[in-house]
Image (tube, rainbow, N blue to C red; front, side, top):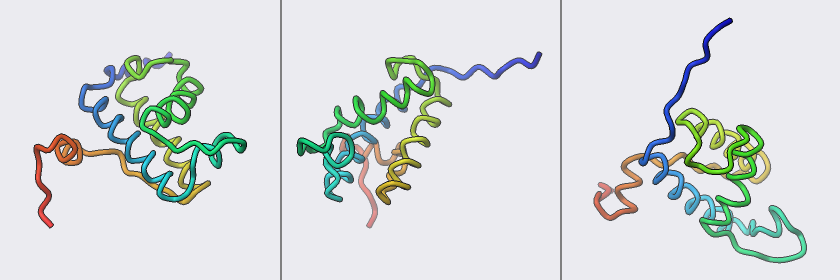
Length: 117
């Protein structure tokens, strides 16, 4: 029997990056006219928010893939796998791709880093 590699719980930086990702994806979906109605519920026009992305896109996939309810339970590898699933689905279905936020993007969000244009 082969031992499976044990991955550490998601990091604080990954958690920050997740929340930046949720905001970026919400903005991109809204900018492309893909409100929650067009993506999830056809009856009601509902714009995306960071928390809506977390609750209606991220969490259901996380639970389906790993049977974990909270992002605090995810390992570093599981974060990548959930992201890959969402990114692939949104890309194939709607032509939208959001890269996973980097440390530079997190610092920009926090106002601690200036981009060189």
